[in-house]
Length: 234
Image 1 (cartoon, rainbow, N blue to C red):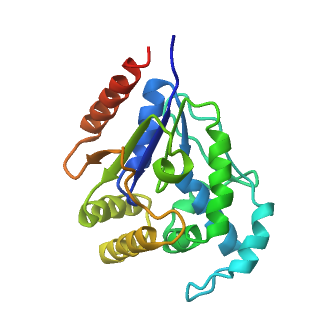
Image 2 (spheres, rainbow, N blue to C red):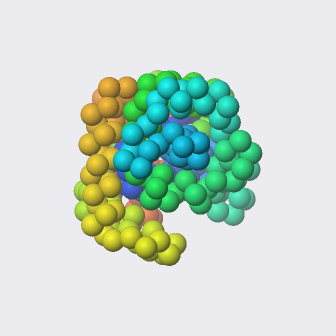
């Protein structure tokens, strides 16, 4: 008898966890849920509604009042790539939420307790039936503390900045490497030190440092761990 489990993949920004989580889900036939995209969608909604000023200050009360009007869903995954699009109130915003403007503010928005509580409840509802791979910052510690497989992805800020810079340049964004690295270090600081569900490794999480690993090597490591865990549940 097949036993579906919950797989929680946490880690620093731009550590590649979303890519590996998506690929793992496709490989093992699970549903992939990008929790980071949900926080990015809320950040985009805040920007569109003028709730984040030019100097980065957030109208917290205004954003909390806006939350009931925000719906976040995902399109049906592509059968080949396994990718899906993030829908904000039915609109495909996948490209817009990956830009630097959203990246500059998403950690601050994510630190707002009411935002985290609302999205945590949404994420837990999405994972009720198990058979999911979800990545984020607090999946193994807050969203699914009882997840059968927990992974914490680590990589140096420099390596992560190089990867992110290459992605943005490939999309045609006009940005410097220095800006990207500064953004990553700033997000690390905010994620680690926020009061509500800070970024940290769950005590029972397996650490995956991918500074030098290829995507193939990462997938071999992840699938090996998955089969090791599930083989004992037969």
